Length: 193
Image (cartoon, rainbow, N blue to C red; front, side, top):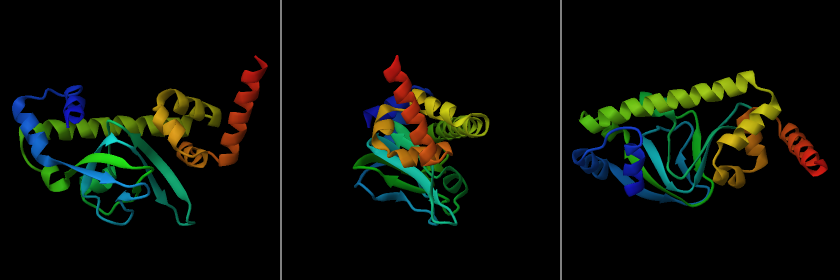
Protein backbone atom coordinates (compact mmCIF):
# COMPACT_ATOMS: atom_id res chain seq x y z
CA UNK A 1 0.00 0.00 0.00
CA UNK A 2 2.92 2.36 0.70
CA UNK A 3 4.17 2.05 -2.91
CA UNK A 4 0.69 2.88 -4.19
CA UNK A 5 0.53 5.99 -2.01
CA UNK A 6 4.08 6.99 -3.04
CA UNK A 7 3.12 6.54 -6.69
CA UNK A 8 0.22 8.95 -6.28
CA UNK A 9 2.51 11.40 -4.46
CA UNK A 10 4.76 11.63 -7.53
CA UNK A 11 1.95 13.25 -9.51
CA UNK A 12 -0.55 14.82 -7.11
CA UNK A 13 -0.48 16.17 -3.58
CA UNK A 14 -1.66 13.53 -1.12
CA UNK A 15 -2.70 14.54 2.39
CA UNK A 16 -3.71 12.39 5.38
CA UNK A 17 -7.37 12.48 4.36
CA UNK A 18 -6.41 11.24 0.87
CA UNK A 19 -4.37 8.41 2.39
CA UNK A 20 -7.42 7.28 4.37
CA UNK A 21 -9.53 7.31 1.18
CA UNK A 22 -6.88 5.27 -0.67
CA UNK A 23 -6.80 2.69 2.13
CA UNK A 24 -10.60 2.42 2.09
CA UNK A 25 -11.20 2.11 -1.64
CA UNK A 26 -8.24 0.04 -2.90
CA UNK A 27 -8.50 -3.70 -2.23
CA UNK A 28 -5.70 -6.25 -2.56
CA UNK A 29 -5.86 -9.36 -4.73
CA UNK A 30 -3.49 -11.91 -6.28
CA UNK A 31 -3.97 -13.36 -9.77
CA UNK A 32 -2.32 -16.60 -10.83
CA UNK A 33 -0.44 -17.03 -14.10
CA UNK A 34 -2.90 -17.07 -16.99
CA UNK A 35 -5.79 -15.68 -14.96
CA UNK A 36 -7.86 -12.89 -16.50
CA UNK A 37 -8.15 -9.60 -14.62
CA UNK A 38 -10.60 -8.30 -17.25
CA UNK A 39 -12.23 -10.36 -20.00
CA UNK A 40 -13.04 -9.14 -23.50
CA UNK A 41 -16.81 -8.77 -23.85
CA UNK A 42 -17.41 -8.49 -20.09
CA UNK A 43 -17.90 -5.34 -18.02
CA UNK A 44 -14.66 -3.51 -17.20
CA UNK A 45 -15.50 -2.53 -13.63
CA UNK A 46 -12.02 -2.45 -12.06
CA UNK A 47 -8.87 -0.37 -12.33
CA UNK A 48 -5.68 -2.12 -11.21
CA UNK A 49 -2.44 -0.96 -9.65
CA UNK A 50 0.20 -3.67 -10.08
CA UNK A 51 2.15 -4.06 -6.88
CA UNK A 52 4.22 -6.91 -8.28
CA UNK A 53 3.82 -8.92 -11.44
CA UNK A 54 3.32 -8.65 -15.17
CA UNK A 55 0.17 -8.46 -17.27
CA UNK A 56 -0.60 -8.18 -20.95
CA UNK A 57 -3.56 -6.44 -22.57
CA UNK A 58 -4.80 -7.75 -25.90
CA UNK A 59 -7.90 -8.39 -27.94
CA UNK A 60 -8.86 -11.26 -30.19
CA UNK A 61 -9.61 -10.04 -33.71
CA UNK A 62 -12.19 -11.49 -36.12
CA UNK A 63 -9.59 -13.99 -37.42
CA UNK A 64 -8.80 -15.26 -33.91
CA UNK A 65 -5.43 -13.46 -33.65
CA UNK A 66 -4.23 -11.91 -30.40
CA UNK A 67 -3.47 -8.22 -30.96
CA UNK A 68 -1.46 -6.81 -28.04
CA UNK A 69 -2.11 -3.23 -27.00
CA UNK A 70 -0.27 -2.82 -23.70
CA UNK A 71 1.95 -4.49 -21.11
CA UNK A 72 2.21 -3.44 -17.49
CA UNK A 73 4.41 -4.38 -14.57
CA UNK A 74 5.27 -3.23 -11.04
CA UNK A 75 3.98 0.19 -9.96
CA UNK A 76 1.74 0.64 -13.01
CA UNK A 77 -1.98 1.20 -13.43
CA UNK A 78 -3.99 -0.73 -16.00
CA UNK A 79 -7.58 -1.23 -17.06
CA UNK A 80 -9.59 -1.40 -20.25
CA UNK A 81 -9.64 2.41 -20.37
CA UNK A 82 -12.66 3.03 -22.59
CA UNK A 83 -14.68 0.20 -21.07
CA UNK A 84 -13.91 1.36 -17.53
CA UNK A 85 -14.59 5.08 -18.06
CA UNK A 86 -17.77 4.54 -20.11
CA UNK A 87 -18.84 1.37 -18.27
CA UNK A 88 -19.07 -0.53 -21.55
CA UNK A 89 -18.07 -4.08 -22.20
CA UNK A 90 -14.31 -4.43 -22.44
CA UNK A 91 -12.75 -4.54 -25.89
CA UNK A 92 -9.65 -6.19 -24.41
CA UNK A 93 -8.47 -8.98 -22.18
CA UNK A 94 -6.03 -8.27 -19.39
CA UNK A 95 -4.21 -11.44 -18.38
CA UNK A 96 -1.55 -12.20 -15.77
CA UNK A 97 1.67 -13.36 -17.46
CA UNK A 98 2.75 -14.81 -14.12
CA UNK A 99 1.55 -14.49 -10.53
CA UNK A 100 0.56 -10.86 -10.09
CA UNK A 101 -0.34 -8.94 -6.93
CA UNK A 102 -2.57 -5.92 -7.39
CA UNK A 103 -4.57 -3.30 -5.60
CA UNK A 104 -7.83 -2.70 -7.41
CA UNK A 105 -10.43 0.03 -7.39
CA UNK A 106 -14.06 -0.67 -8.27
CA UNK A 107 -15.79 1.70 -10.67
CA UNK A 108 -18.38 2.60 -8.02
CA UNK A 109 -15.57 3.96 -5.82
CA UNK A 110 -14.01 5.75 -8.82
CA UNK A 111 -17.32 7.59 -9.26
CA UNK A 112 -17.45 8.88 -5.68
CA UNK A 113 -17.20 12.63 -5.22
CA UNK A 114 -14.32 13.54 -2.94
CA UNK A 115 -11.15 15.56 -3.24
CA UNK A 116 -8.80 12.61 -3.78
CA UNK A 117 -10.96 10.90 -6.41
CA UNK A 118 -11.33 14.19 -8.30
CA UNK A 119 -7.53 14.61 -8.43
CA UNK A 120 -7.05 10.96 -9.35
CA UNK A 121 -9.62 11.05 -12.18
CA UNK A 122 -7.82 14.00 -13.80
CA UNK A 123 -4.42 12.34 -13.41
CA UNK A 124 -5.73 9.03 -14.76
CA UNK A 125 -7.25 10.66 -17.86
CA UNK A 126 -4.14 12.77 -18.55
CA UNK A 127 -1.72 9.85 -18.21
CA UNK A 128 -3.83 7.63 -20.47
CA UNK A 129 -4.11 10.30 -23.15
CA UNK A 130 -0.34 10.80 -23.16
CA UNK A 131 0.22 7.02 -23.37
CA UNK A 132 -2.28 6.62 -26.22
CA UNK A 133 -0.78 9.54 -28.16
CA UNK A 134 2.77 8.16 -27.85
CA UNK A 135 1.65 4.72 -29.01
CA UNK A 136 -0.31 6.16 -31.96
CA UNK A 137 2.67 8.26 -33.06
CA UNK A 138 4.97 5.25 -32.79
CA UNK A 139 2.69 2.98 -34.81
CA UNK A 140 1.93 5.53 -37.53
CA UNK A 141 5.24 7.33 -37.95
CA UNK A 142 7.99 4.79 -37.37
CA UNK A 143 9.69 2.02 -39.29
CA UNK A 144 9.77 -1.46 -37.75
CA UNK A 145 13.36 -1.11 -36.50
CA UNK A 146 12.56 2.30 -34.96
CA UNK A 147 9.54 0.83 -33.17
CA UNK A 148 11.61 -1.99 -31.73
CA UNK A 149 14.48 0.26 -30.64
CA UNK A 150 12.01 2.67 -28.99
CA UNK A 151 10.39 -0.28 -27.21
CA UNK A 152 13.78 -1.49 -25.91
CA UNK A 153 14.81 1.98 -24.75
CA UNK A 154 11.52 2.95 -23.09
CA UNK A 155 10.18 -0.29 -21.65
CA UNK A 156 10.79 -1.88 -18.26
CA UNK A 157 13.25 -4.80 -18.47
CA UNK A 158 10.73 -7.01 -16.66
CA UNK A 159 8.41 -6.60 -19.66
CA UNK A 160 11.16 -7.02 -22.27
CA UNK A 161 12.41 -10.22 -20.61
CA UNK A 162 9.00 -11.58 -19.62
CA UNK A 163 6.99 -11.25 -22.83
CA UNK A 164 7.46 -13.63 -25.79
CA UNK A 165 8.75 -12.03 -29.00
CA UNK A 166 5.59 -12.76 -30.99
CA UNK A 167 3.57 -10.73 -28.44
CA UNK A 168 6.07 -7.86 -28.64
CA UNK A 169 5.81 -7.98 -32.45
CA UNK A 170 2.02 -7.85 -32.18
CA UNK A 171 2.27 -4.82 -29.86
CA UNK A 172 4.62 -3.06 -32.28
CA UNK A 173 2.35 -3.76 -35.25
CA UNK A 174 4.94 -5.84 -37.11
CA UNK A 175 5.19 -9.53 -37.94
CA UNK A 176 7.13 -11.92 -35.75
CA UNK A 177 9.32 -12.67 -38.79
CA UNK A 178 10.20 -8.98 -39.19
CA UNK A 179 11.09 -8.70 -35.52
CA UNK A 180 13.24 -11.82 -35.78
CA UNK A 181 15.11 -10.31 -38.78
CA UNK A 182 15.64 -7.01 -36.93
CA UNK A 183 17.03 -8.82 -33.88
CA UNK A 184 19.28 -11.02 -36.06
CA UNK A 185 20.65 -7.98 -37.95
CA UNK A 186 21.31 -6.12 -34.69
CA UNK A 187 23.10 -9.16 -33.28
CA UNK A 188 25.25 -9.51 -36.42
CA UNK A 189 26.08 -5.81 -36.41
CA UNK A 190 27.14 -5.90 -32.75
CA UNK A 191 29.23 -9.05 -33.22
CA UNK A 192 31.12 -7.41 -36.11
CA UNK A 193 32.04 -4.33 -34.04
